[in-house]
Structure formats: structure tokens, C-alpha cells
Length: 638
Image (cartoon, rainbow, N blue to C red; front, side):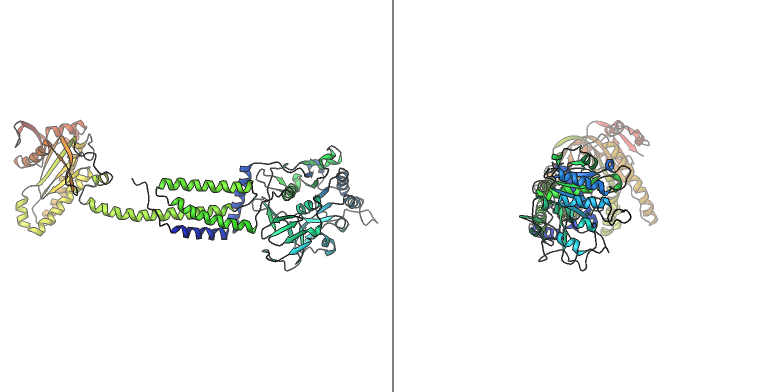
């Protein structure tokens, strides 16, 4: 059996290199909903393989949970004001409120602002570093005076990949009393189809030239005392925050590096905080995110570690990512890495799949896949790079698949040619021996002593028939005869040692002897006579003389051998068994029998438990065989 398949030309590696570059440039992980979902799940897998890690302690969550809300559906402004004041007294450096404060509370008659709204506005003023949530909304006009002081210090569009808005973008903003005393930042989290949130835009456009920062970015700016004019946006490339350059993708987004499931960021119930059940030092000098975690709010997303992650925890996670440069880079530079790696993988995938041994090719290919995934995991866990795993998988799969397919196609072409040549050879050698001989330089049965059944076939009165038919018709007759002999022999696994004019010598016991060799020889004889009977009907209908055969059968010891010279040989068996079988075939004329078999042959048939095949045969005792001194018993049919 072949264990290798033909190798492809070495210069194919350049085609595979180009294919890798094309796949990397195309970046399939970003091109469709299906591949994007696949890439998202592969990113989740990288999180799971790495496992949860400890989150930085500068960020804390105060959760408006079910315990806080009780039967209410919202948090009263007065209660929120009390929470902000408590955090201010606990020396929280930044308070980011992930709650949309869009409308005024109902005020008493004659009052323009409710006591709760007034209390919250005062609490936000006292805090001094409060951030309020905004959210993009179509067809909601924006008061430029409320948002102007919250924009990036500078926006640079040179080389930016993201399209500039043609018209102002609508936003939900807090009421004027709150917006005038706090910073504003967007909290837009755009979950993917599986409700997982894997990236966040650090900047969102409000008009054709102004961008509003994300709440996590604004929280880090205030926590690190960075002036607003030191916060710059290079659209589609990066965000500069003081001395820190944050690489972004074409949509001003970064990948989220989750620390764990719900609670990975230290979280405390709002009601416990207000009631003084949480030590103040848990908040001192930290950025505190306040937001809903109650089940009824529905502000939850899927994370790699849990099916439920509150939106406020996503925001706090992003802030921690930015503060410690642990965000996942998904920038143009990362795309360049993807192109280079995809090109390299294309070349390596070809080299791996083009190993001489098919088994080695499979092993090296699997190893290459393993190294690729290990590299992806290392880049994620240690370098915080979100490389496009889908790109690498597509490059490996396409190049590997087509390399193996091309090699298999080439092998089939070669095999087809070899099979054609072998079929041609098989016409001159028994198909039972062709495969056996093709796999061995020296047949295992060469010069082997064994038992075998030998069958001789001859046509009665052939000389007279040939004289009457003439040379051309005689050749046609012999082809018809040999074809019928061949069918009966092959059907019973007999090896035709040679055709001898109007007869043949057939061996049953090659390439390996079997207990039923004699039984199969007798079956071949009976089948040949049945075939001959049908042929005779056609011959008689055409006015020709019917064909009568004489068959001699003997079973006994032989020497199997490969005879001939160095360049051409012949498989045969030698010994007295062959001579006796030939003499028995000649005795068919004397006894007017179609089949003459020796007693040894019949005994072997019976030993194979095929007595049923002997029905109709009769025994002739003490018969003299030419060339032998002692007499033997014969069995003849009919």
C-alpha cells in the first residue's frame, strides 16, 4: 500500500504566500455577520483559555440592584443625590453615573424644579468630578451649549478611516440643570448578534466635526487629572490621553479585555452604601461607576465568563483596560500583523501539507495549527492584541485543503496511469497474482512446497475442428474458449498458469493454499461445463459441431516457483501432481468422460465437507495411469 503521495512543485509556495496576503487583506473576520460571529466566539474562547484575572482596584461599582429598587422601577433623584454625597464624603475621586437622566421629576405646583432634581444638581456640583450618561438617538436634536465643553480637545481627520457624519447626530442628554454641572460622556454599548459586547467606541460624533468621549475614557481622564485639551482624537486611528496613545480601529473602537464574569470589578449595593454598611476607604481615591444591575432593567450583556454582565460593569471594565493599557488592540497596525502572519501561514501551510509522507504531512499540519492557536493565545494574553483568528483559520484551511486536494488529484492521475498499466499487465498474468506480485520483489511462494489442486482442460477432436475452420476462424474459436475457461477459473479463484492451444492448466492454491482448493477446482470444472452447454446451443443453431471438453483433476504436493530469467519470469507449480493431472485429462478420451479426478482429489473435496459436489460421479478402481507403475482409483463424470 502506498504511504506517500506525490509532492507538488516547490514554486507553489509563492502562490500560497500570495493567497495568504489576499486573505489577510480581506480580513474575513470582519466581512460578514457569519464570520464576525465566528471571530467573536474565538475571542471568547481566548478569554476562557486564559481564565479570569484580577481587575485593577482603582475602579468600583455601586449597583442599583433589586435590593435597592425594591418594588420601584426607578431610583428617586433624592436617593441618587444622597448616594453621590456619600461617595463625595468618602473621597471618591470620580463618580460616573450610568443612568440616563433625561426628564425632570414631577415638581410641586409653582416650582420649576423638583426638590429631588435640585438635590441631585447640588450633589453633582459638590462632587466636582461627576460624569453623566448620554446615548446616541436618531432625530433627537442636541443643544450645542450643553455638549461643547465635553468634546475632545482636538480632532484630527487626516488619514482617518471612519467616514465623517454629513449631518448632526442626535443624542439623549441629561436635563440642563445636571448637564451644566457635570461632564457628559456616551455610554453606547453595541452588542453583537449573540448579545455579547466585545468592543466600545471611545468617541462618537455629535456633528460633522465634534466627537463626544465614552464614559470610561472620561473617567480615566478625570482620575488621572488630565486636562481636556490633552485629550485628542485621530479619527479612525487613535485617541491620545495625556502621554498615552490608545490605538483604535476604523470606527474609533477598542476591544474589551474582560477580567471575569459579573462581580470581577468590586461591586456594592447602592442601598448598602447609602446606609453606611460599606467602609468609606473602599471608594477613597477611586473612580466609582453607578448603574443599574437589577434584572428588570434589562441592561445586561453576554460575557465570555457568564451569560449575564451588567452594562455598568462593562463600562468599568473598559475604564480599567484604558488605565492600565490592557485593552485589546484592534487597530490598523494589528491588521498589518494579520496580513503578514496570514502570508506566512499560507506558505507554511503549503510546506506542511507538501511533505513526502502523507502521515508526516498530516502531523506537521496539525502541529502548525497548534502553534498558530498558541501564538494567538500568547498575543491575546500577554500582548493584548486582538488578532483575527478567523483570518488565520481561513488561510490555513484554504491553503491546506487545496494543497492536499492538488496532491490527491495528482496522485489519482498517477494511480490511474499505473492502474491502466497494471490492467494491461493483468491481461498477461492472473489478477489474483498481479497485486501480490506488484508489492513484492520476490514472491513469498517462490520454491515453496505446498498442497495444491491442478486442473487440465483440453478440447476433444480439436485438430479436426481446426482443419475445418481454417486459421482465422480457429483463432476466434480459441478466444471464445479461453474466455469461458477464464470466467470459470476466476470465479473460483483459480490461477491460469497458461493457455496451451486448445487447453489450459489451472492451479488452485496460489498465492496461498486453502483447505477448499480441491472443492473450488471441481466447482470451476462444473461451471465450465455449464457454460459450455449454453455455448453449444448457439454453435448447433449456427450449424457448427458442439464442443466437448476433457478435464483432469488431481490434488497433492507441488513446488510453487517463479521460473525464467532476470527480466521475464513465469509463475508455475512443478511435481508429480502436475503430471498426474495431465494424464487424467488424457484418460477422459479412454473413459468417454468429461471429468476425470483422482481419489486424492475426491478425498480433499470431502475433507472440505463438499460431498454434495460429488453427486453424479462414479468410481473406477485400480486404473493404470501412463507413466506410473502402481494403479490408482479414479472418479469420472458422467
